[in-house]
Length: 348
Ligand code: SF4
Image (cartoon, rainbow, N blue to C red):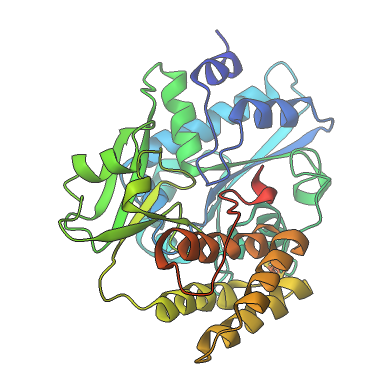
């Protein structure tokens, strides 16, 4: 069985948070025309609470590099004219600690370590921002379509896969893939850390089996400490989505304004400023929550505007923690959140 058939049989999904089909992405890059193609292993990991890629690069770098080489031979197999260059686009902090070990693993292979520029933050890990960054352009998302699979680095077809996805490719190739994934548990949990467990476990089961299920009243944020969805403790019988994180919050004594402000501060610091709904909308929201009397109608209107008109996934992810928190946890008087989009439309 060839590698694409094996990936399809294993039903591999991207582990960067978007959960896009790996089979489809590989097929699109393979079928795109051009004698020059690129592979980018995304190790930028910029969202608070997401630590798994750093953990994988520390403990399983050889398998990740093996995954890159498998992708390379898939893309140029039988097509000798096709040249495939590979990059590992790595977070600066990881480079400081893991760079020497990675370079040793890479050896003479044609893989370049490209360090994410200082200050590129969360948006610097969005796949079209990565392309701009490697090309030396301003770090901001590109208009899509065209997609990187056909028009990526320097206009050439580019396969962008997350660290964990490429690890899974090497496991699939050697018939060792067991449908497991990495989870990061953080916040007010007793036994925080990174865990490798079956990929279909519910949030509740992950917390219980890792000895992290709290003995106090709590709520969680799942899928990233910035953009993740917020759920109360009766809503934990679903699998962990996105990048596999669970942050535990203590319910009693937490301050609604403080927590909403922390999410908005994160997005305010990360917005690239390219489009008005995101640049102005997040600023307005952060001003609104500071006031003693919050205008919830205006607050909700700005959230809807962000969802509908933002240029990239960062802007349309802003409402995810805020709306889910208001609907599932805070239930503040006068706040009426009817719908709740758990997945940003940009990631569908
Ligand atoms: S939504 Fe925000 S991060 Fe995305 S392009 Fe617009 S300003 Fe930049």
